[in-house]
Image 1 (cartoon, rainbow, N blue to C red):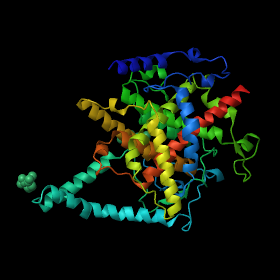
Image 2: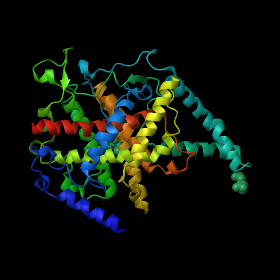
Image 3: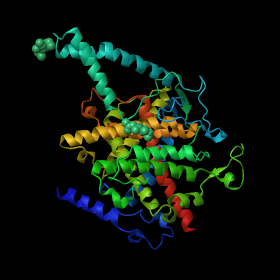
Image 4: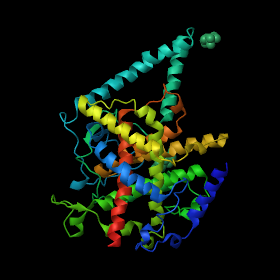
Length: 443
Ligand SMILES: *[C@@H]1O[C@H](CO)[C@@H](O)[C@H](O)[C@H]1NC(C)=O
Ligand SMILES: *[C@@H]1O[C@H](CO)[C@@H](O)[C@H](O)[C@H]1NC(C)=O
């Protein structure tokens, strides 16, 4: 109990302390002034996470995500935007996504997708019936039908993401051939995405209308609302770090966005533009802190789901590779489990009817964020946006689903697992890349 109270106090202290309180003499740049001390809502320090990630997690993930099971992600990039009409589709060559041809995807992956679908159909018609029969042999046919419907409804309720991989238009994409990097997609179409996420799909302090919530105002919101905001902000930060770390350097040298000889690399100018206190009303350094928060959130989800994920076969049809993948996943999960100060999700949504309502809103907001991804005008950004929101949504499902503790009922689909690991891989890469920028600034 004492522990918990002291943690809450620390959160308050850390959030409201001024920038210079963290200014270390050897750090030349103000972007990093908030990157020390305790991570908000958590019990561990930034430098603990830096070391843990850069030494233990990042190298493992880097090789794991090259495996066939994780490199092919299926999504529907052709869904219509449900909220507004956007005809400013990005036609620039770097926005384009190259979908896989029929022969590119291992048969095993396509096979399991099919199999899983059939299994699922069987589940609702045959499989779960057996269990119902076991519970009550006298159950009526009508009752059986209703129960199946309720279970389906509950299942849908369990998801924090809209599902699009079963759509007819869904296609496999090789993530390694379509890396996340600066595409030139910006302007009003891009701004509209983040505006609608922050302004219409986040919790906000009463009568506060500016886009980003300053860290000093965050404390007027409750824990769950802050967690939601920090997760969104952390995701936004991470995406921006990738764009800065894989910036089209030749563009800054005057090369046009359509030139096939594009050259990508880290841009310190772009990084400072996005995160220095001068250009962000002092908030940039806090956004960087939120990256560490979402990292811990997803790390906790991986550790929590470890018993489930350790049973996965990661089937692609190539026996040797599948075995390697299983071993590499187990190795990574062991590291995740060993992390000593995990985010504690059990403090959230506890108690009253109000907690249930809050959870409902939390889920509705996030579901809607995954729908907004269909409005992204640049296919490559849409692909990575979908992947990363699905990964975060899967983490939330692991952390907050009622069904998680009922082993038989909890299920993750292949695309959820692929998204979870790749999304975490993106966060891990961001933290790793921050070190590069820090070094560049010191020289
Ligand atoms: C089984 O279901 C029937 C019909 O709904 C009900 O009347 C009966 O009490 C149930 N039996 C048990 C053991 O729950
Ligand atoms: C979903 O997002 C759109 C676009 O921001 C917004 O107009 C709408 O009100 C949101 N719906 C819900 C249920 O939050």
